[in-house]
Image 1 (cartoon, rainbow, N blue to C red):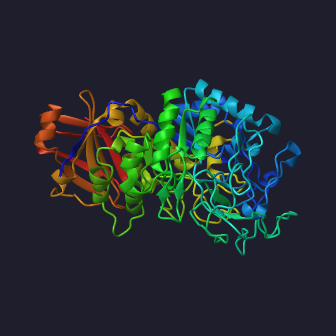
Image 2 (image 1 turned 90 degrees about the vertical axis):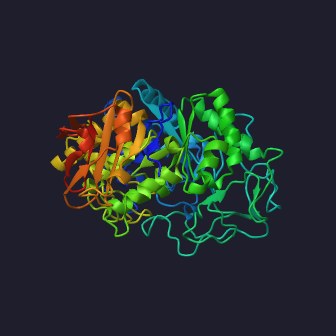
Image 3 (image 1 turned 60 degrees about the vertical axis):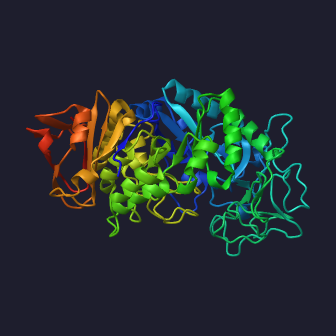
Length: 577
């Protein structure tokens, strides 16, 4: 079993902070279930100040992923500003899902202090982010749009999505949507938009869409289920789903050029990268075409794909031209099993990730332990204690040369408690509701961004993330070095078990032994570095190891004989030697 992996020459070590502006800057603490924007408050672009951005830069971040920027369907009425009100029967949550896009060319009016100047406020945020040495990532949602989609600010000459469709045809390569001729759309039974307290003349269990369009999660029915993405409609890239998924890419479907124009529009505003939603629902031929075309004009543009099928990773990288893909079903799931102490958890699953699933493409994988789709580590539905994730976070950040992402609130142990509204009580922070994020608010501290209200334990957790991310950023062994796994060499060693993981990251100048203990009990292990690795490292004799996070030291009089290491419960070290 090969244990060495070479690094890429390109610096792939993006360190990303994901935040929803709607949540990040919201200082209100009311948190009423299904509360309105007036009751529960909302964060604004302007709340992400120079001070906030400087603090993020100092934490080690290189990129900020602004989630939920593009205008989406909402139950909040902005008709006085010329924005057509949405029918609540096809909106999820009072605020609405950021992934039910209403106008690809506009930004969410919720996020503006001056709604008429909402684009100006977002453009100012982009400039502010750049001025503080950070780059901007924003969402691109290519698979589906809100049922109420209509652009009212599209540039002159742009044909709107669906504008030229022949609605008598279920499928046509020149249509932007899929249709169910002769069948009107039916709102799922039992849906109570906005909860009992929300009233609207349009809240009547009906939505006028005839013929019905296919729903975003590939449901070709006029009566989608309440658990479907019923608030969205599927976009047509030239794939005939009901006839064997046959493809019609020549000539290029009109939607391809429309999506290019949208991505180019945002790139011209200074957006540095796009996190692309549900990329596997969109053909990789489109991605290869659009990314190649965009990079001809914007060579430094970065594309990140949300992907879940390991069998398709290489197609989306090699044919689709993605720079990075989410590593959810591999590393995230393996680490989650270990962090939650599941009976079947084993660190050999981490070996399987780099040694099989992402072999030779590891530098293209974006790793995380939280994002807006996943449960909070500190939630009762996940670990119940943010500190249980320390070994997992050490590996997430240092296993490869690829990017690492942290979700706002993760670094202070936000547990995502309580029923928020449509979001329910699911261990996640709601993306559908107006809400304040209680533990994150303690760090934001009324715009001071100094953690002034955090407990001592939270401050220590924040310090851990700060030191980890800056260490990864500044240590070339961790950001761009080679990899040598030590599992095979140590599986017969005293103290070894399958809840421990260890490897070396190294360059000619720096070397780091990463060793992590997922056990809920302390461990003592005698670690051996194999002769071929010692030869590569030109290492012999007395050797001292120093933890880059906390300064703990271990030493051996003869590295050829190994080193004894003590690990507290659920802990790990980045040992420079």
